[in-house]
Image (tube, rainbow, N blue to C red; front, top):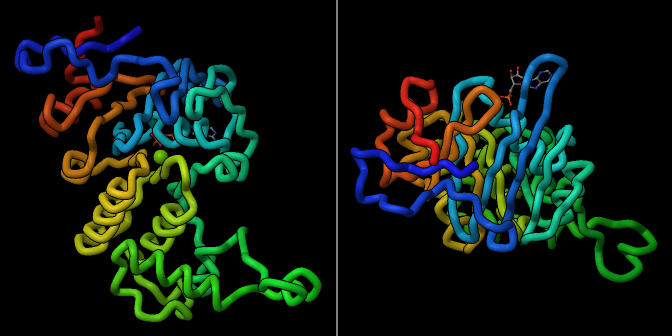
Length: 278
Ligand SMILES: Nc1ncnc2c1ncn2[C@@H]1O[C@H](COP(=O)(O)OP(=O)(O)O)[C@@H](O)[C@H]1O
Ligand SMILES: [Mg+2]
């Protein structure tokens, strides 16, 4: 079932097939034969996917190709009808996104989940608030706001989000890009296995998009792999190591920015061209 690129235009690829399936013991995450149907609509049609240590894996595909469904099936937001998910070579059965978070996977879903009225550090620690040490925390249930703010500020600074001046600022007063940056920073701060970003730049301007792309590069520099779902070919070709092409609930193959041009990627994505199957 492997997809090989024996494209005569790209003889330099030789035998190195970026989509060749490997044993899940060699990957951070693997999905095998994932199937999900919504009534008569096929969301996932036996999809295989691998995420390797330290890489940025882009997932591209037309609207309705099954990108979000794939991500949800890998991160506990939905249970596939059948198929397997492996984390660090061991099969996992996430029943909720909280299960996946507990296992070290942070996902920024397409519908952005920030709490607009809360400030930046409260958003960073949403769902995992820290109590103050000693009886103040254990008996009086007091939150360690100072500590959380300091840590949130540090991780925002580490990630180079220099434009956020004040950690007390409510998230609703931030620009779209800054909100997205908070969501991505939160994911980067708490993930220990990998980060998933579903269309993180779809609603952003040029400058804000640049900020999120910088964040992705920094997450990668810290050694965490990233799955980036995106429509934006220039962005994908800039940051991705490999590109998984989703199509009609299935997979049209895996390419790299070196093996194919953005135009070729779009052609494969739309079905105008097919990758040779070996
Ligand atoms: N909750 C749902 N109920 C019914 N159909 C759905 C649901 N979620 C997704 N689908 C369908 O599954 C297919 C894949 O959707 P999706 O994964 O959201 O695609 P993408 O993220 O690539 O745009 C589409 O045909 C979509 O309409
Ligand atoms: Mg989607």
